[in-house]
Image 1: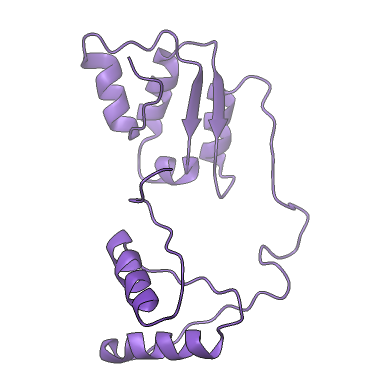
Image 2: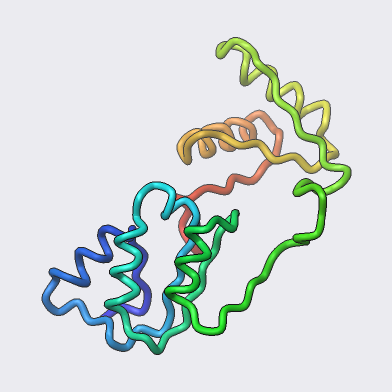
Length: 161
């Protein structure tokens, strides 16, 4: 057996229902990340079925960026004596004071030059840059490090250490 299974709701439900020898009776924890997104894209029924099938004696953890009615319903269905942990729910704004956010619209052939120039001028500041894919993150991090602008890359395809 294995100690950890990571799966999409549909795939997990398929294994729970159809795979001979898929043992889950000793399951100790069910962790649902991005619960709001999972429910928003249509996995509500799958999640309900998964929760019904899995052992009742387990720890269940839900992570969600937003508290929607569907997330609350899933919490009611899957959690016993839930503990809600929020990040400063009383704040008027979700963005920390002093954080500057911005964007620039430019031609695609000028994007890297603009990014490089901006990063070079703001070298002493802490900056996060987001890209649309893991490959793009890796490519740009490698390129910036190559042109002597040290940076870290964080993406989902990194090897765990």
